[in-house]
Amino acid sequence: MRQYLLNCFLILWLVFISGCSDVETPVGKMPPVLKIGEMAPEIIFQSLMSDGNIDDRLTNYRGKVIYLDFWASWCKPCLTSMPLLDKMRKELGNDEFEILAINLDNDPNNGRDFLVKYPVDYPVVHTAELDIYKLYQINVLPASYLIDKQGVLRYAHQGFKANDISKIRHEVMLLLK
Image 1: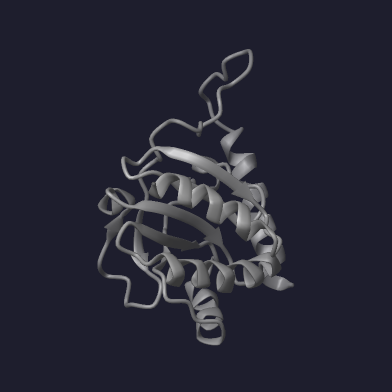
Image 2: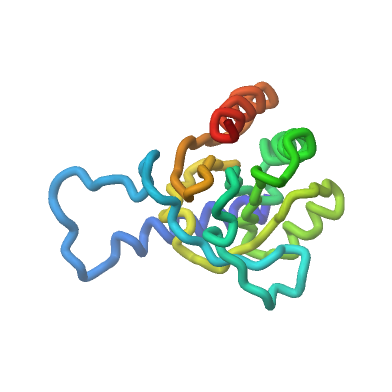
């Protein structure tokens, strides 16, 4: 509960400071940061289970269909989604498809502890990018994006229920054809 409240505070704080700028806000409807059909914004990250000294980036996964999954250890739907995603990845292989899970816990140790209890075989990473919530329009966890082999956003999914996996698998299969 404490972690949940801390994460809520962080999100509210980010919303607050984004509005506390001396830059004049344009009048009218602002375009969303992300649009299906556009390139996925770059993310620099480190493996959650390593010492975190080696940076990797989203663009290094070009050439594969990527299911980019934002999650946190306190997220109950993530507890449901991660084993189902792991099973799907094992069935589809990782030659042309990869799941990349980005942990959003403030303390990466919480994500590590989660993975000790509930291990997965796909890459799980952590990023220090403070604007990741805004950059990827994360309002609910898990929040996921399907990215094609050229790095273009093709599908977005927020939240998770067990029966969502069939729709996600269908979208992945469309991109793998």
